[in-house]
Image (cartoon, rainbow, N blue to C red; front, side, top):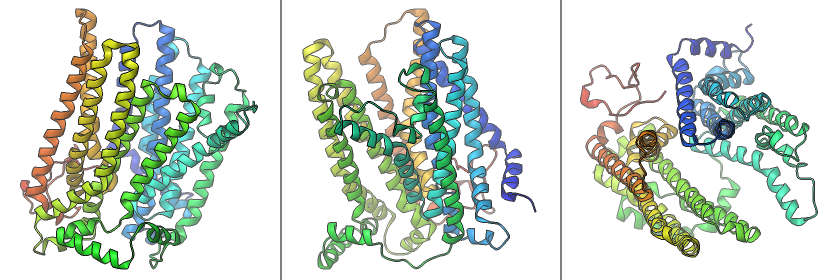
Length: 561
């Protein structure tokens, strides 16, 4: 009998798949573009300094990529099989739990691993520039691969437990957050309790994230050589524990089970929800407004979770203010906090807006709704009102925080740099306006992506790429071209002109995609709601028509495998 037969099959399939080679090429191209852009921006420094900056910047990006991409690729691989009822068929054979887990791990990680490997030659350019040793390069490479293995294993464990795609993804990132941050948080707490505590690496070595710092051990004076290998070994141990748990859970988690009330969720509903009489009144009120609004707003805890997340972020910020009062009240910290708050709300909205349409399309609920007198415009209005009720309060809260940061930074600008007051005000006002427009555009684009995609992950990524990443990529590309031209023409760019250009790019991009998504939702909602995921994909990623279909039946989106 072949050892790990699914792994062997997946490797054979991957060797014939075009995406295996295209993904590796894409990873190298992206790494070269980022490296070239960084070198262009710091070209006035000495070669040794350029090498150090390039090495550190690319290393940090690789660390973050390995942690995020691994969990994203495996967090739904087993749970998808459970939802579709195909996982149990594998256990009718002689396959064991570890066969399936290892096969899924290889199948979903190969392209990510190849993309990571293709970035290492770009990272090695810093060795030619000087300032970086070969030991640091190999340490960063090992840490990156180790973190990717941990992230993939955590995603497999979360997928073995969960059945829902969003829950599996959230659980995977929560596991990584706990594994990475539990011991550093405990170390910080002990430092606060005992100010005379001098050993700062006792608990930090248990965090896989500590290996990211020890990879640059020669530049951090208090680190010992053993501080690198202990976190590396513990990271491997964590990853193998997650895989072993996933292998033990999979044979017992694929069966359909009767829904049982969760004690914690029941208690949570009892605390934050009204009694039976008020629940009935709320349902009647929502049904009178819009039936689809009631369908989308049946779970009142969605808004509670969002507010709880903002409360936790606010508590962390207040704790930092109490500990480092003078250093905390600085302009970079204001900007960083605002970016974090904006990003959390945008990604949350992109996931929430597409979730209802994807789930209802899978279980044919949208077809049943369209067979009722309920019109398409009423369905879209109900979804928009539900999103507004959930996100309006948090958006207003974040805007108030932005205004507070604007005023705090305004006082510092007036005291230190009076000539930058107008730019500071313009920057915050433009950022706040773009934030509101991004939220509005994401709601429409995410609804259309949810209607035309198979998975929540794909729909959310498509919406975020169109609204958030596309204008930034266009802005950075154009600024790179302009910066290269200014080296020859000696053109001085006014910072206000650059800000206005970024603002115009974001606004125009939002208006274009918002209009496109609105038009598709209003004219093609019925076609997409009743269409099955049976369309084939051409070599360039565009959907081919099914037998008997016309060109009007094809959605103008790229499907992702």
